[in-house]
Length: 174
Ligand code: QAP
Ligand code: CO
Image (cartoon, protein in one colour):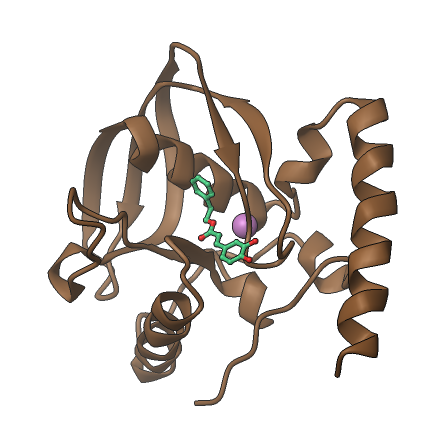
């Protein structure tokens, strides 16, 4: 399966993703294709909608102390629901769908989610730190929300200007 990253301002990123009901080969094929794409593009998290599939599925692989992302650290999260959120933390976020732009975003420090794995088994995960931040960022994608939506009006305007300029430069260098 050949996948490419959908980039802002593509309207598909605004879609609300649908619940996964069939934990079948086509789901596994999609997840299996998302992982190498995420790793090769230096991602730590990727939602299915970012590769054009509007389903409630996301993957994460938070780098370890050595900065490595071994396959055994891959998390596949289907139909997540947040059952606890507390505390506050700020992190300079980026997104594969918004290349070359990073901004401080406020998130919950501690969360608990219920979700399903690729076989439909129900799981619970308690997360904090970067993993909790990444889960919240990716769960926003399922609602059509991007991290740039959380910027102040002034910062968002600055982003739109910089991003347009960057896109022009990228186009010209192709
Ligand atoms: C979401 O983001 C995230 O602009 C995952 O040129 C972000 O993997 C979770 C990336 C921050 C937690 C904290 C972005 C790669 C990757 C870029 C990513 C880029 C190359 C973003
Ligand atoms: Co993102």
